[in-house]
View (cartoon, rainbow, N blue to C red):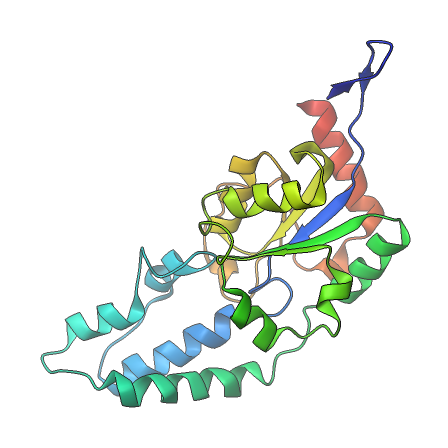
Length: 235
């Protein structure tokens, strides 16, 4: 908490909401996983969620499904042929996805209260532009921070840069995340975090996060604001 000019303690007000992208605004996590599962199955291999989970919300430095599959078969794989096919499968699965429930409504409410909006994603900007389901994203979001701008989660850099671009402190924001890696990044950045696991990440263990809900459609802006305020009081 901050001190006002009279020396008394002032409660930080909520000034911005920072959305993760993949799995939060649109479920690209399960579509990518299903495409990789299909490729693994073609070669008699199984891709387990526990393995793939290591790269959800971050990049492939910890777990690279292409490198892993290559190491499991006794022959050389033709990735020049397989990669376009995997991407085609992913696009097919992704074409059936819509904006996650409650996202549009929360954005509209946040804007009506005069708060700012941002995206903090471990994906590159090119990917976000390609699959963004919200029209006029550059008008909606005051900042879009990606892995092009800072190291990926679970490092806190993406969220810290989002705060800097918004001109606010950690206590004045809320992060909305779907993955353990993202929740850890928010924790490291000192930002209140709402976790909304999707069909894939709900199978994972979340060690961080301040408020867990099943869907953004099940929580109101007022509930988010009140939970954020209680969190600040308890610190």
